[in-house]
Amino acid sequence: MLKKRIIPCLDIKNGRAVKGVNFTKLVDAGDPTVLAKKYINEGADELVFLDITATIEQRDTLYSTVQKIAKHINIPFTVGGGIHCLEQAKNCIAAGADKVSINSAALSNPKLIEEIAKEYGSQSVVIAIDTKLQNKQWKVFANGGTKETNLRTVDWAKSAVEFGAGEILLTSMDGDGTKDGYSIDITNEVSSAVKVPVIASGGAGKKEHFSTVFQQTQATGALAASIFHFGEIPIQDLKKYLSNKNIKIR
Image 1: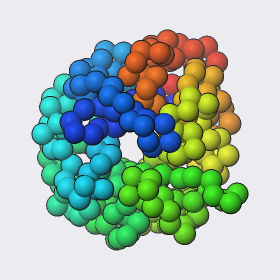
Image 2: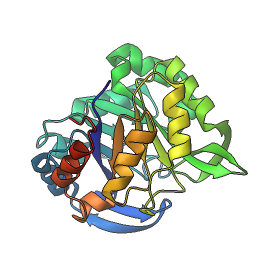
Image 3: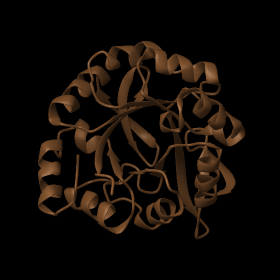
């Protein structure tokens, strides 16, 4: 069984880390490089960098910011936002990313997953899925959560893996920023349906939320932002808590 991972997320807008609720009401959370250094010192297992407005603004990822962060970290580093072709994925890897996360571009061109996986291996391709409960069905959203698709979340997750995705980053838009806990039902459904690691995202507010998602689903990673950015839950304390719950962590 894979050991569980604690993963801080840097949502980036205009070069700054930001955090909102349900993908709206963004507030400044600090300098991403400073935060990245902090997470290294605290024992984070991985780091995710998402340039959340790159796709909407139709521009490339902020490669210079990626480079700055990459210089200071020694843990797996996933970068996403604005990656629409193999060349942009190459630029992210060249800037210091270990893995690239694609979302909207994969929805419009699933072959892109295959192209990146062929170039760098499936382990370097993370499919980010933004999902929301609509009429009792979990649906996939594109363009930074602004555009509903007709895809059922679990169906898209399975298709993405078939195209070569090596990991799924599953974000519940309903849970995002609420601190009410991860969306266990869809996380369990997706993590049970695919044979690649799944990262739960959206809703972490207290230590119990992490133990619940690890105990009640097959997710191997749990991602959070604001509770780490603003020092509400130190990563060392969280790992000690999970270890005391007999949850195997890195």
